[in-house]
Length: 107
Length: 125
Image (tube, rainbow over all chains, first blue to last red; front, side, top):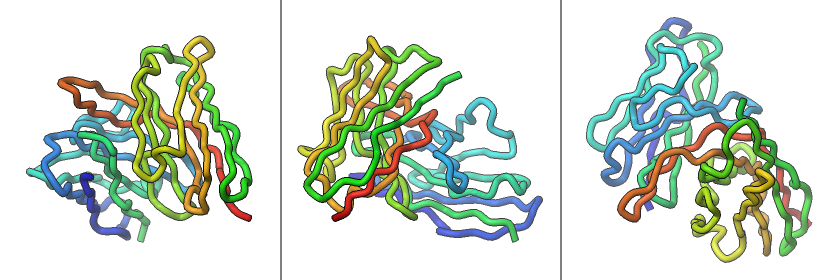
């Protein structure tokens, strides 16, 4: 199985800060990497597919990028409504595996 | 608007069975693969199973293989997950979701969205 490792596991930042979350795959997955946002008590929401394809309706302050087996979710100007846990998922092959999550809080 | 509404969760004893349902509306259900993903209390996301658009192909996580069965009724826009031989570690919120992406050359590349609100399954004596 492909292992997905996210870092950090938690993060506290100020409104307006630039925030980056990293996800590393245990083997090559091309660009088959997806990011989700899960707010407390809610279902996950699809943010970015294919490493950098922003879903319709997602604010442009969110972006995704990749370098080899390392993938990055960046929020350019953190907003209070971005408080959530963020998960990456490899969409390369079954079993589709998720990272352990990054809990993002406002400082 | 796409809507996915899960039901059927509840409290069940270890070794017991349960059937989860997911009612879909607002999209062409029969043209999409569908998946189940679960989340144990306070934990991360775990992919459980997937079924192709026509129901002919299925795949499961090793943790549930042989115990869970996914199926669908395209005439009624319904997705199901039959849970048998339940264990304590199956306690989780179970979400249904559209499985986006495609298959080629025998490999399928899938991501999930949108998701239903989830239904809680608690396995306990």
